[in-house]
Length: 433
Image (cartoon, rainbow, N blue to C red):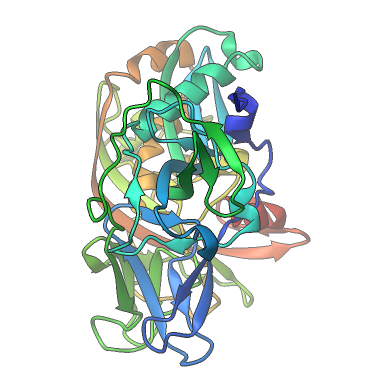
């Protein structure tokens, strides 16, 4: 009787730092058919043969598969696995903790199947699941939310995060989510690996064949959008993993969504420095129910900031800030706190800086999910605020992308007005999230 180990540590990989391996996807260029290799975080497809640049827009999330060997390509069955990579913050006790997770987990209720993909996607290239494929599918019925909750529950037993009482709030940010299918086939009384041909696990006696027939499951439709400005037709600027694209011809910014490219309100803080380096940040106007925050002065009082309170601050709007680029957890928390508590500026120049622009790879809706974490982080009386987080209702009514100038001093980028700084290593490590 063949058996497989379903130990927790084979089912997931929890990464304690940001040096994670990025999986690769192979896909032909939609224009000329030349092979293109993408990383799982890539959203821009750039063909070195025909020079076309296209933006990838999935309907919801990407679906991939591991191509079976031609020797076993007949009667292939595809097993679904969730892929999740991201940072989860959670408020517990009187502190904010986080987990950096990198996992694949079986999405089928048939628990006799291998619990994870292991290291295979790091050694083999994936392909986008085509709209039509000659294969049967194990039904994917386990929601990703359930898998993540089970992982977090088990991990709480592995370190000191299990102490300190209940979790009042948690938020997953910087996440990469996809569905990956692994091939198997039936031979004799066992499932065999569709790539190596080796037996994987014996077929249980109580196994019920509930496989979806050929044609009942397919890949999600992916739109390939030309990276041309919808406003003026000029080439848009962006890196491989950018979620925002810049047009320096007509001074516009565009955010990718399921429906295409949408314009983004933006501004910049002009710099007096000769060699300024601009970083993009989300500035969010929001209403908060369940917390006494009606003005910028209320925000300062919550944080007990040692500032001389100005009368006009009682009527001044407050804003929550978040990087529009990925950062490791600690620098992320420091940046949201520092900019949220800095004195608001209502006037911004409505043009893109001439200086180099750092790519934006952090969606606005992810930034919105960080607001409760920011409130918890700045609050002095956390034991009073944390229990309110569950019922707190935060609604963002306005997003602005603001380019803020930094100057390189040694190994740190320093913002001269607020004296907030970001280490070069934080930017480098953020690119691996």
